[in-house]
Image (cartoon, rainbow, N blue to C red; front, top):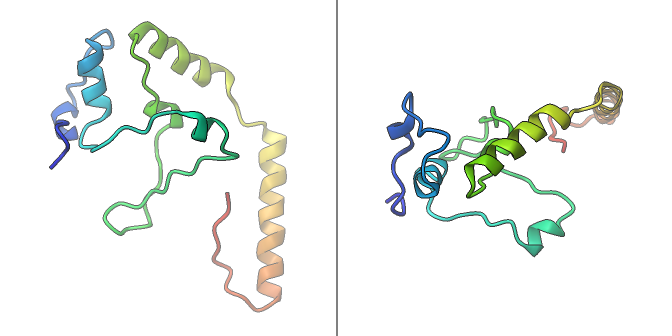
Length: 123
């Protein structure tokens, strides 16, 4: 049961037009999902939001799409504007990414020196 939403395969190679009705775009965005994740006060006040990528018990999956692909705005013009704005202006700063990689490397080294398994997750 897909909760009344169509199977995602319906849209493979045949996406809705960008200016399709709000209902059609929401169905495509929600394909096979049983409920919506609404951005409310709880999410607004959260220190971070984590999307686990488990699929049928397989923890080896990765999110291979930008987070903003999951956003939905009823007005298609707003939807396009917001996604383009994020795409064009939200960037990881190289210096911060490189510093974070050095921290992870140092943690791995310390963990290994203490005789523990070198396999761990970071956020």
